[in-house]
Amino acid sequence: MKKYLSLLLTSLLLFCTGCASSPNVASIEDAPEPTDYTVAADTFDPSQYQQIGSFSSIIDLESLLPTLEELAEQSDNIVYGRVLSTQNYDQSGRGQTLYTFEIQRSYRGNLLPGDTISVVADGGYVRLSRYIAVNGSGHFEDMTQQEIDASMIYSAPAMGAPLPEEGDIYLLFLDQPLAGEEYEPKGAYSEHLFSSRFICGEDGTLSRYVPEENYYGEGERSYTLEEMERHLSQLLAE
Image (tube, rainbow, N blue to C red; front, side, top):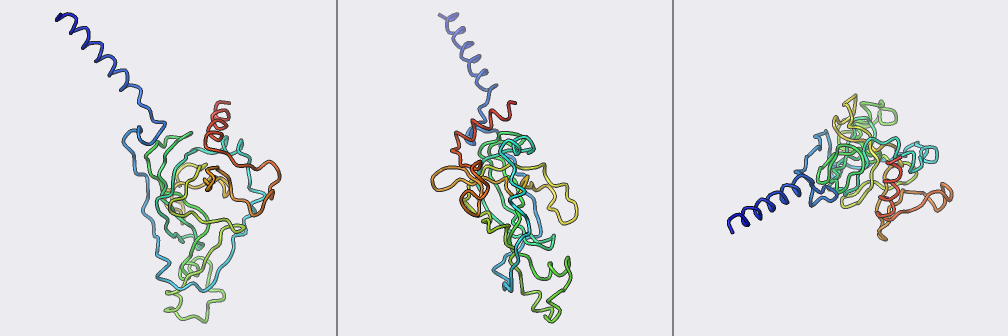
């Protein structure tokens, strides 16, 4: 009887050891201890400023729309998750949105489910004082310093694309973290291209922003998460 119990306990220990050695990190619930990769940056609250104008990005989306195959090949990190919060970042003299992103699934790179990162996207508000510091006073020479310090300009994303918002669910194709060159928030991630953010819509499908239907031709489409994962699995295996 004692010999039987000893064998049974040994078998249970071996079984438990085998489970522990193969952790399932496919979902955020089963991931290892998460890591916070978010960065501190010189951000500001737009509600404290008066908007006095706006300008639009000159980015040509049509010439910057890579295929899904190209994105999978060129991006260093491919992750799926949700936006936790957004901030305005304007050190470059233009409006950018620095958003905190919680990763729920990871398909390429070293980031794991549960990790949080900072991501920079074009578009947002720029303080007039910062705009002038980088670009010159231009049309604002008649304003007092007090008026300048209280004002901001809205920098619209290219072709009317939406800004990231808290609660948005994205599939992101990202480059390596920024090295901290002039005006860069060191350690933040950048979207590989303006068109490398797929948003999950109300119908549950992932798609990129398009200004109007069939703007990029018949090749652009939406994917369910299952379809996207299957497609990515094939692309990354090649």
